[in-house]
Amino acid sequence: MKLSEDLFLDGKVRLLQPVEGYRAATDPVFLAASIKAKAGQKVLDVGCGVGAASLCLAARVDGVQVTGLEIQSDLVAIAAQNIALNKMQERFRVVEGDLSTRPMDPEPNSFDHVMANPPFYESGSGHRPPNEIKARAHMEEDATLKQWVDYMLRMAKPKGSVTFINRVERLEETLACLQGRLGEIVLYPLWSMNPTGPQSRGAKRFILQGRKGLKSPLKFASGLVVHEDDGQYTLQAASILKEGVGLDLSV
Image 1 (cartoon, rainbow, N blue to C red):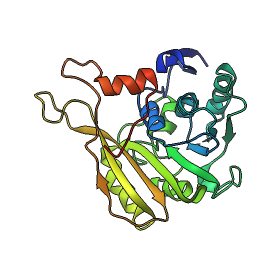
Image 2 (image 1 turned 180 degrees about the vertical axis):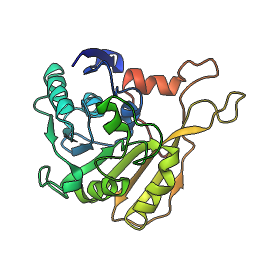
Image 3 (image 1 turned 90 degrees about the vertical axis):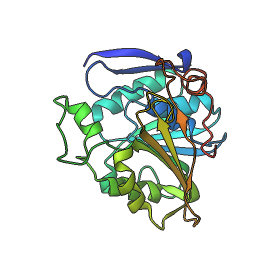
Image 4 (image 1 turned 30 degrees about the horizontal axis):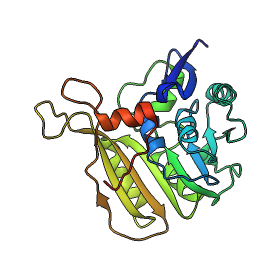
């Protein structure tokens, strides 16, 4: 498999990833930025791929311990290379496993934060990409969205945070799966362009974050505008993508 080496966070993270197939872009960086982790806490990255979100989080929060779960053995092998490439052997480990089988490694109810970028598309919907790695990353084939939600809640400690990034088309289903199981939920839209500007295209992605076992009303945040009207990153987006600044979902 041919790999490229790409730089994230202005070179703080070096990432090997397949030239063809699923390639990490901005989503894992925004996901990692939204995790309010502290040194000594444990984070689980479900469906970690080659480790983009995990490495970005570890680069931002010194002392955090990250575990990645990934079903595709090819991506697990590349993630292991990325761990060594970024000298993160003491802080990041990757486990090959299928969340739908509820494996006991990693250990349930043991993570302060659980994060994931589940597949964008339901099984059987749309055109299946010809590249197998990309297809399994984008299409709901190995597990349903409900199984992703169930597994993530199972892995989080009581009152631990659970965070998703996904397409807005999957928001209704995500909320239905979480009903009564996650509290202090914040829904944070990612706007491609200024929602009140002349080139507004609406929000295509959302970040949803809550805490296991709590009960409180859902809150809507104003969200993040990713691009200016000329296509350049906004100052806030650039600070996250290039400088590794955290993303406050309460704003």
